[in-house]
Amino acid sequence: MAIPNVRIPSRQLYIDGEWREPVKKNRIPIISPATEEIIGEIPAATEEDVDIAVEAARRALARDDWGSTTGAQRAKYLRAIAAKILERKSELAKLESLDCGKTLFEAAWDMDDVAASFEYYADLAEALDSKRKTPVDLHLDSFKTYVLREPLGVVGLITPWNYPLLMATWKVAPALAAGCAAILKPSELASITCLELGEICREVGLPPGALNILTGLGPEAGAPLVSHPHVDKIAFTGSGATGVKIMTAAAQLVKPVTLELGGKSPIVVFDDIDNLDLAVEWTLFGCFANAGQVCSATSRLILQESIASEFLERLLLWIKNIKISDPLEEDCKLGPIVSSGQYEKVLKFISKAKDEGATILCGGERPQHMKKGYYVQPTIITDVNTSMEIWKEEVFGPVLCVKTFKTEEEAIELANDTKYGLASAIMSKDVERCERFTKAFQTGIIWFNCSQPTFTQLPWGGRKRSGFGRDLGEWGLENYLNIKQVTQYTSVEPWAFYKSPSKV
Ligand SMILES: NC(=O)c1ccc[n+]([C@@H]2O[C@H](COP(=O)([O-])OP(=O)(O)OC[C@H]3O[C@@H](n4cnc5c(N)ncnc54)[C@H](O)[C@@H]3O)[C@@H](O)[C@H]2O)c1
Ligand SMILES: C[N+](C)(C)CCCC=O
Ligand code: NA
Image (cartoon, rainbow, N blue to C red):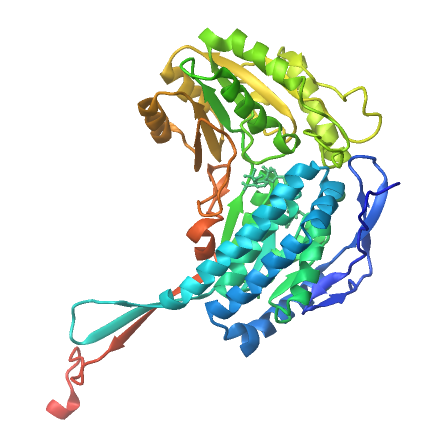
């Protein structure tokens, strides 16, 4: 197969600052979602490798070159990583596009975000130095107290395939900024760029063991990390089903977890919007960007009845302009689904919706011009009711389902009619109404007159079955800090709770 201008490096596991063959020497093929061909392979770690990596991480924390660094020193490593990401941006974007089918344009966007996240957490690492020890004034003569913010220890970071390097970075950058030693376990479906992060860490001289990267299958490489007694925390992004397994396993050791899980987010469109096309474009972007494989995809369109037919007609016109092609082709706006398994799942959701009586307004099939690869047309489904699977479950593909409403109350009820709670969007020019929806939406992220724009400074995460904890912003850093209180008795007088024998 001709791979344009990029070679997929053959890597081993990144442990203790070195490339290391997995103990069991197993490897996993990389299958191109665009061509269905094998284009490379990644190492497959098992429990034995997890043990070696955890040891390396613990040693890093015990060594001065990592365990005693200041935030300012760690910031230098983070900035050096950011610079290398930008230096290799176009190659990394191509690798990621080949690996998970993301359009080249989106992959390049993600690499900018990756570099920006490392830069951002470099700033927070520096700022941490002055916040490391915070006195707390009790207004008492006999006690002096302070609070220490310390690295939490060895952290396990388990991440998905939809934004492979970006989702890893949302955890790696703050974990390193905090001074933790980390073990990253990326998804077996898209690990290439995460392994390249290993090479970048090696090149910038990140102290050995500060970051270890173990590729491999979830049950073989992820599960042993979760149940390892010397891993102090697990930060996970992925599906709800895996989230439950991770929380259950971590509970046996009372190990803290943060869970960033899936969603079925609503976009509510009111008839007072000034610009129909603006709302139409955000609706498309909110559901079809990254071929709909976005945790926060606004995949339920809740549309005011009075504009429903006009809005849907415009959507259909705009959809015709979405170029579906090999993701590396210029102007591609919709690439393939990541794997055959996910592709089959998406098609099954569509056929179940049909069986349950919904109407496929457009799409619903493989695009005829794509003979190979896991491509699905952008799909809009109408005549949906709230008991249908397509309304309730996360599809993780380019599938938008639509329901109409008459009143604001009805719109709120429909928006919150989900077990998930990651994101919500509202399109309306009425600012007060938007404020009312902000209060009413049961989600961690709210977009007004847009869907999906994400900024590193802001907290990212959900509630209900979308999980708990926050990535990004200062909240992302808190995930990796241990808060320790120190209370000092400063009086020279005895405490005098017991009777002193010297006074008897
Ligand atoms: N909320 C968010 O921020 C966010 C962001 C991106 C993706 N997601 C969600 O991720 C899901 C898609 O990602 P996915 O299919 O890669 O998820 P997944 O749960 O299948 O896999 C995620 C990671 O968990 C690992 N894993 C699997 N079984 C494991 C086990 N038993 N123990 C430990 N680790 C295990 C996998 O190898 C992978 O690295 C979607 O549901 C999506 O909504 C959420
Ligand atoms: C905000 N982004 C860039 C779409 C990333 C969302 C992460 C979840 O899938
Ligand atoms: Na892949």
